[in-house]
Each structure stands twice: as C-alpha cells, then as structure tokens.
Image (tube, rainbow, N blue to C red; front, side, top):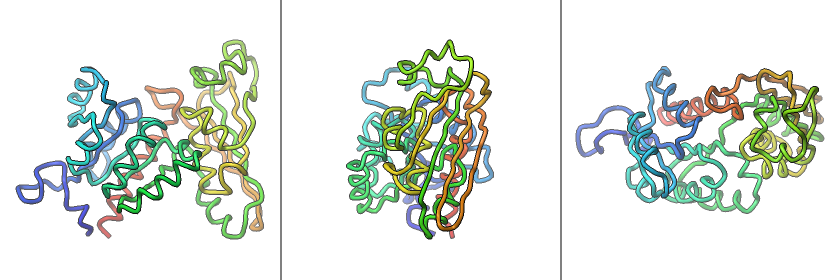
Length: 286
C-alpha cells in the first residue's frame, strides 16, 4: 500500500479516519456531475469529495457542490492544501494548462480527461517536467477502443493510423463545424474536417478529444489523420480507428450513446474516467 492510499476524504491520518480516499474533480460540468452520481455506485465505493472551479464562479457552483456533497475550491493551492489522493480534470484545455501542472508539482496524481490539450507540444513538455514533482499523469482512454492494439502494434512499427468521428449534427453545434457546413440542412453524412490529430484537437477541443487518445497511443499528433463527419441519421457518436503496420492491420468501430446532459460527449467517455479512478486505487493497493 502506498503512502497516498492512507489519505482520506474525512479527518486526516492523525485523527479518526474513514477508509475512503480523497478524490477531487476539476470542473462541475456534465461529465463531473455524471461521475459524481455514478462513482459511488461502483463496487469500490469511491466518491468525489471536492471540486475546483474558476475563481469567478458564482453561487450556482456552491449550490451544485453542496447538492453533490463536495467541498468547493476556487484556488488550486487551496485544493492542494486539502490533500487530495487523486485529482480528475473535467474542465477543458484551460484547466489542463492552468491547474494540472501545479497539482503534479505538488505530487498529486492527476487524471486528464481533456486530452486534446496534449496536442500542444509545449504543454506536454511542461506537464512532463511538472510530473518530476512526484505526481503521476494518467490519460483517460475516453470514448474510444483499440488503443491497446495501437500500443502493441507500435512496438513493431505503425505506418498508418486514421481516426473517423461521426456524430449527429446537433452534437457539432457550438464548434467550427457550424462555419463549415449548414448543420440544420444536412440530408446525408458530410465530412466537414480532414487533417491531423493536432489540428483536430486544437480546433474541436470539446468534440474531438478522442483523436488525442489515438495519437498518443499510436504515431503521434502530426502523423495521425482525422476525418470528422456530421450525419443526420446518426443516433449516437461513432468512432472508427484504422491502423496498419508490420504486424498487419486492424479496424475498430464503436457506436456510443451520448451523455444524457451533453450530446457532445459519449457516455463511454465518462465511464472510462470512472475506470481510471478505480484502477488508480486498485494499483495503489497491490
């Protein structure tokens, strides 16, 4: 058992201590709320104990945190002082840039959900340097499968990796797709973006973070090709990954239901975060 596993979301180790670890979430959006509601129902009995929100967040954030039974923080230093065993970023690229380095430097293990932010090579280098402080950075797999095949095949060399994301037009609203096509007028599947994983992650941070997971597992952000599609017949979010290399070739396709509170996000993405949390504490015990 590690030293980190001794800290809990109750009184500190020098007093009476319940057996639950302290877990903090960055952000209180749809994914954070989904995890807060479903995590305690898992076999591990874990729960989120604190939330970090932007300094200017109003009383609605306080009300939401109170409803979910979490302590609210508006300053990352104050959150670090709370002593989290694990932090989970669910607040977008800005949070990865502004909050995660400080957590890693303080030795707080952190799960990053907004993995599209890692398309910025400078930020990746900054996070790697921050992790020297003792905090382990974990990237949630998100709504995509097949990453283990990419990692395994990469040992023999990958020559081609392609990701194709297909969502209903409504799921692309509020993104640059609105300037590329008339989402309300589509009658057939329409490709509105083709480029690299680096470009997709930068231009579609709320919709295409899964491309970053594919790039990190495979041949990198610049070599991974991406196509994004709006399909009026789609009832969920579809993710397809193709890879070729010395080992052979493969194709993986997943049809995911959207998160009830956010059509841009696959439900499987939230579940992958829950698994990352549970896995962290499983590995801390064995």
